[in-house]
Image 1 (spheres, rainbow, N blue to C red):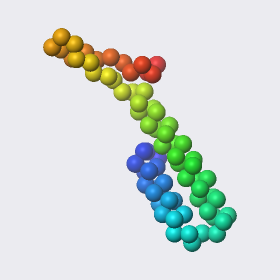
Image 2 (spheres, rainbow, N blue to C red):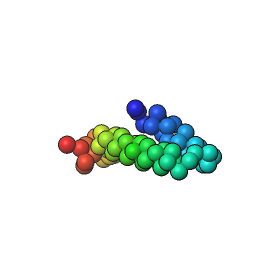
Image 3 (cartoon, one colour):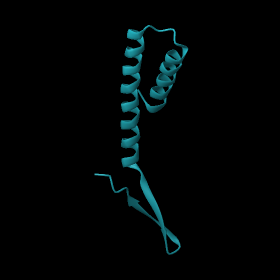
Image 4 (cartoon, rainbow, N blue to C red):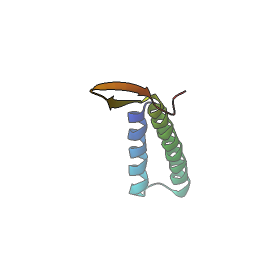
Amino acid sequence: MNFEETMKKLEEITEELEKGNLDLEESVKKFEEGMELSRQASKILEQAEKKINILIQKEDSIEEEKFEGEV
């Protein structure tokens, strides 16, 4: 799943939990699923952050530097 799909699924789970129509067992399962999706979304964001190049303007020109976290 990509980031957008992960967030959409998280929203769906949140709505289901907020409705309060689930029994305790189902609520716990949905909560666990939501926590896993949250971890996945964080991982996707961290990976994207590592790919970011920082642009620094120096003496009328723009130079590109690698993001410090990049390997």
